[in-house]
Image (tube, rainbow, N blue to C red):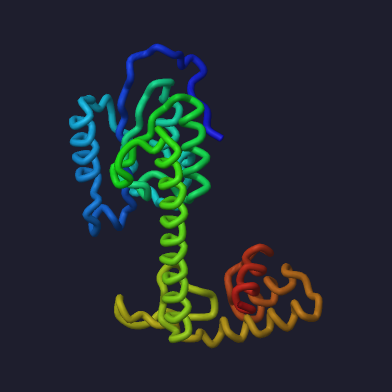
Amino acid sequence: MWHRFSNATEGLPMRVFGYCRVSTAEQANSGMSLETQQQQITGYAMMKGWQVDGFFVEAGVSGSVPLVDRPEGKRLLQALQAGDVVVTARLDRTFRSAADALVTLEQFKADKIGLHMIDLGGDVTGNGISKLVFTILSAVAENVRDGIRERVREAKRYRASQQLFNGGKRPFGYDIEGEEKNKRLVPNANEQAALKRGLGMQANGDSLRSIAFVWMSEFGLPKMDAKSVQRILAAARG
């Protein structure tokens, strides 16, 4: 749970803050750039007769991170006082999940802070209908993100089944060959033999330290700690 500064008091002039966020990929590929979001928020505020007192801009931060754990999100939440209004261009710019959205919405309402989301038509803290729409769309947005994550996982599983390299650190037991977009995983004979030996030793009850010693002394592999050996063997078992 986030908390505002304890000296926030009633009767202060209303302040309006804009909140914007993009992930690294979206900065280059999406129509929801930071500049676009700021323009939309400024335009919305002008229609309301408001002036935006400041923007909290989250550049290159994943939507999977809760608002309170984002650098600018945390700073925004700490700065808010009763009577303030937060304006954001879209639901998915602000919240990680339906649960994250609804908890923050309830906190805003309790603290007399307004939340306006342009894609939802404006104020989502003002009445029961707005909250109902907000609840439904939060759940829909969460479901869409879950679907995207699953499609990414499926694509990675398919590439792995074709022995295509998904990027990141070279997996133990394989070498990487080929051009940038068509890199493939090719079994490394020495490391595959070490894996087979290590899995057999583990099944026989040998310690991880013993396996690390055998890998170093018999297979010429670098010295490893027990956790590294455990991680490699777990990955090999799938």
